[in-house]
Length: 361
Length: 217
Ligand SMILES: [Zn+2]
Image 1 (cartoon, rainbow over the protein chains, first blue to last red):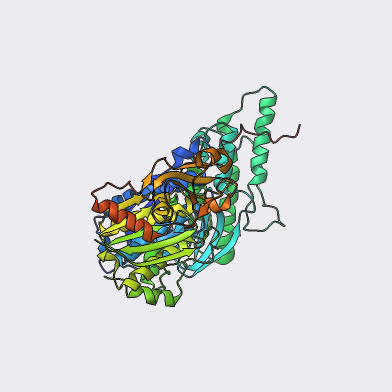
Image 2 (cartoon, rainbow over the protein chains, first blue to last red; image 1 turned 90 degrees about the horizontal axis):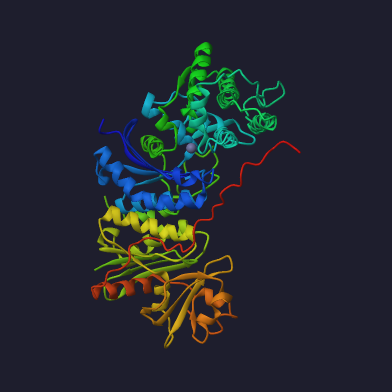
């Protein structure tokens, strides 16, 4: 449909330089340049390395997205960009690019929230989000349960991790097992050949008095590390497959249990799962099983849309345009701790009025 | 010719328009922590002051540092993206060269800017247009011999009077000087450097020590 908004989205909150283009809820391009290999030897994302890579990758990635989408920049209806949360220096590269691009093209700029974008991306896969939507966001940087009645204005946090993010726990256990970085995909792979019930690792914050929707993975991480060390100290071989499977089971058991409970408590019949950990095969399978049993419809985008990308930012930007939300100002800043309750960063009117005279389109 | 010049490699956020002969509008604000917020509105203001729109620009000139990285990247990313959107060339100019060009000193001198961590970015010049050393980053005390006996320009010189007893203005670079220097070099048919950052330091990144045991001994 040609009258749906054509939006380009830029994402640089961590180590992926993502540029996506959507028309309404249709994905046209999803170009990503990753610096993950440069971080591997450090065992985690190094902010300065990520920022330098974003600067080098940005223009080629924008060009690739335009080519893939088969559109020209002047046809765009808006430019969206992750304004936060994320790594401050990395975000600033994307925000600078988006502002310059929007200004030079004479298009409105939308600074949007990274977490709301992770939810909104599912529109590209499964069509318009149901309202309300329950979302479980799990990645190396975040683990939260969010309830949204309108993804452009209202995202309510029900719970979040009180210590490590789920993806962080995968990275740390992979390090203990000497499996390299990032840990998620490799643990998923080993776990497929292991027994998830081999070792009973603890399920954090699942007691009757614990907060119903918060998560904790720090205790689990320590328990797994101790178990491995005890094996090593006894001179025994560490059963990597069983440890991977049992650890992964402990994580996804808690995530899915709490997500399904939140849907039940709030009377929501859909569950959306996003973020890099949503690419985990066991999380997808167990969520499917438990949602079916509870009569909840599960929506999980394909793995490439779950990890950080520009298409998710474009998807939320397109929704901002479609719903006539105010654009951001030219003094938009990167906010590394942008609250999840702010789906976007609307501008102050006076700045925009001054600017309009210089815009041409 | 209409050049839009910008620099964010020092605490100054500075923008200027140059028509090949003169600077026709400029803006300079000093706020080391808000490069990202201040730059685009400054571009907008400068264009409005000149009564021009961005699509009139025929080339972008950007300070490539050396300078503190986060701020430096704001200018470079903005310049790169303007170049992409407008289809015009983006020229790099060493930020220290911009400072040198605006210096009001006779004979050889040194330019030094604040590199933080008790270091300066610096280079030696024979005159306002002629840099004779590559830009470098050093502790002032370590270069005292190399800069002895000549005047010094820039905030780095003002910060370390023991090493730079004869410090002169300007403190920060101005896009007006950057643009004028670029216009002069382009008119002379000179090639300007690519708009890539001069970081001069490797990223701070610690390779984590081998995995630490969590079991108490
Ligand atoms: Zn993310």
